[in-house]
Amino acid sequence: MVDSRSARPRAAAFGPLVGVAVSVLAAAALTAPRPELGASLPGALIDYGLPLARALTDLAAAAMLGFGLLPVLLVKDSPAMGRAALRASVPANVLLVLTAVLTLVLETAKGASGSRFDFGLLAEEVRAQRTGVALLALAAIGLVCLALNLGCHSRPQRVPPELRLIAAGAALLPLPMTGHGQHSAYQGLIMLTRGAHVIGAAAWTGGLFALALLVVSHRVELAAALPPFSRLATVALVLVGGTGVVDAVVQVLATPGAGLPALWGTDYGALALAKVVCVLMLALLGGRIRYRLMPRIAAGRPSGLIGWAGCELGVMGAAYGLAALLSQSDAVL
Image (cartoon, rainbow, N blue to C red; front, side, top):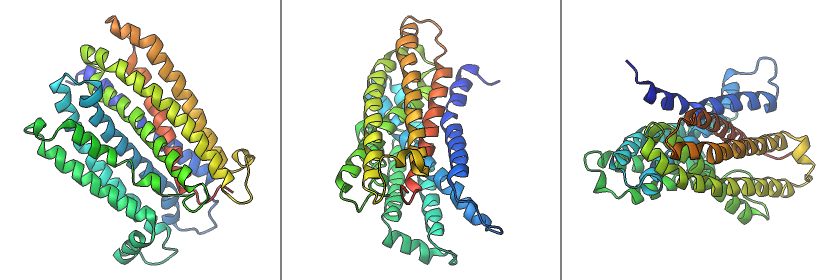
């Protein structure tokens, strides 16, 4: 018989996957070029599969960071939670490696232009493109994290949780350094804002995911973890919102022939504005959790937190899907 207390958090943890799938499929269908008669199926698979694989890669990295934050920042005095986070990190590490490799394969197929796909093309993608190098580095980081976590299963203190957190955080660095805007006059600003944006989003999403999956069924640990997470989420909201707006505006200004009106009249602008809507929704959902539900949890009363956390995770997944589509756009215009 399935314990409903553990089944509900696991069901809510599917929120990011649902959000990613819905946003990628809907937005890609609206923004992808209309295929010509007789267009090949692999082209459609790349149009939809590439942003989906990229979004899942980002979500896996966020989950790794969230599980790393749990014993270091959110639930510091619970060895049982530390062991649970260690166990949960292993599937996230495996997912990161698999999706990074899949994204690299799809990126290579996208640039093949009808050429026969082989390992030579894959090697050329890694040599010639920053994205290829970043994805290969990401897979390597995933393997290092996997080795660290598997090595700690029998003795969790063999590797300090702070070191595992740093290793997980390294997975956030490669991909933000690639993409559009790398050769513009605003390159330094774009890289800075994009890195801060990714770190804030991953800490917020990964932290909530870890709480929903591992902590929400344990009242004492949940009451202890929510205040530090709420402070983290507030900082992340300001960071994600501010850097997202700056990045979009700078990206438009750095594109010759574009201007701020491009935010309203292009696919890039539509995707960017949809992300803004997601952030506003997250602010409302997070505010309800902080000001309405946290006092109930502190008082030991029923709160319905898991339902609201599932909704918030779903919106986060949608935002990650939109971000993946934005990263695949070749130009603002």
